[in-house]
Length: 406
Image (cartoon, rainbow, N blue to C red; front, side):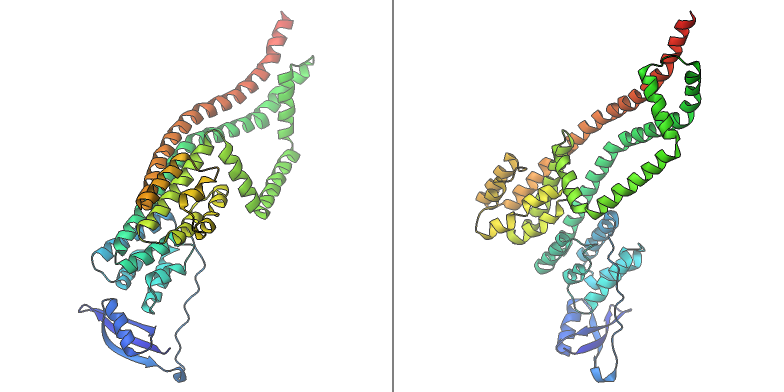
């Protein structure tokens, strides 16, 4: 297919230049008209002239932060809604955006569209930045002419996930801070304060209480260089094993997390909400159910739940219903199965899935409040208990010596 070099205008001052592979000049003109440009000059680049397009710079796969991607999505949707052509909108956003990862990606996407690719095809070349969910919905929006609506819903979903992530971090921030301060306090007491104080007890002789003996043993061990060397080697060894067997360890830890009293239901409901909302979003925009299932499953982060859901596509290919495929999965609740069954009967599976997602998102917020209320006093009691043990082990010999003196 020949390559054409074109010059085109958008408005009285804006000029666009680029190259495009097409069957004829008419194809180039049609493509430019679709982008909202007026062709000025089109020349065919002959292979014999030795003119070659400069190869596009290879981008290293980069994961764009959620906040940056969400901001780009909202701005892109606003420009599309204002009837700005896709290429022009991307060029505007590229000029406005200076983020180290997103800026070169936007440049590459704009170049791809300039060369005749569709938006979804250009996005698909950057899987680290744009998920399969994002790409599929963008393709649906292009075909149906509702790209701005699709982008707004993608941004709304990203906002929802970011808000949930912030709530989880907020619930864990205080307990983690208390635990960190407690660990540093205990290490300081055992390595700097106790060795000097416990020498007095050893010098007095006599029989020391059991808590004091335990404290002396711990303090002596943590004061030695070999302890810290062994601890460092242990951390390196555990890290090496984790990297070498990341899949196995991740599956094991995911299974353990699902069995924990409060964290298990929290993770399960969070993953069900994430899967249901992504699945419902795809179905609401006309993506076939089998393809929507294959796209929505990777959204789930817990590997145990994802492995169970991975059986769904094969079940649907056999002509079975979605509700029957979910019925045999241990992590599925009756509410999910019954709601989806009713959605299939009424032909509103997408709405049913969105309802499931909304319900479980409210449940996750309730569990987060409960978890936060329980973790904070629990961590304070735990750290206080350790410090109390150190104080008790220090004071017991003093009480015994005072009784002997009397």
